[in-house]
Image (spheres, rainbow, N blue to C red):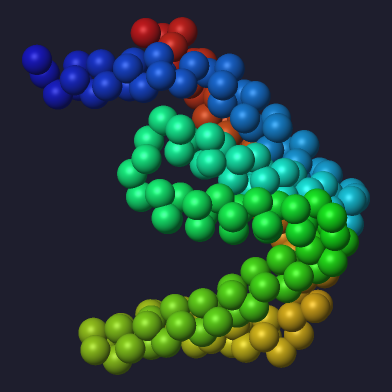
Length: 187
C-alpha cells in the first residue's frame, strides 16, 4: 500500500473515532465557557470550583464503591477516598473561600513553575550557547516573579486569561471541525 493511501486510511480511522460534529460541539462548548469567564468571571469561577468539589466528592464515593469490586491497594484507595471526600465537602460547604484558596494556590504554583522552567531554559542556553533559549528563560523568570509579587492580582486576572484561552481554543476546534467535515466529504 502506498504511503498516501496509508495516511488517508489512518485519517479516516481517526475521523470515525471522533466525528466532525464532536469537534463542532466541543468547540462551541469551549467558546461558551470562554465567554462565561469573560462576561461573568466571579460567578464562573465559583461554579467551576463548585463543580470541582462535587467531582471530588463523587469520585471519593466511587473509590469506596470500587473497594467492593477490587480489594487491591485498600489502604491507598481509602486514603484517596478520604482526601477526595474531605476536599469535596470543604469546597461545597465553603465555595467562596475555596475559590480564593484554590486559585491563589494555582497562581503561586504557576509562579514557582515559571521560575523553575526559566532557570532550566537559561541553563540550557548556557550549555548549548543558545541565546534564544536564554531570552525565553529570562522572560519566564520575570513572569514568575511578577506572579509571586502580586498573586492576588494574578488571581483576579486568571478568569480573563482562561476566558481568552478558551475562546481561542474553541475557535481552533471549530476550524478543525470544519476541516474534518470537508475531509470526510472528499473521502
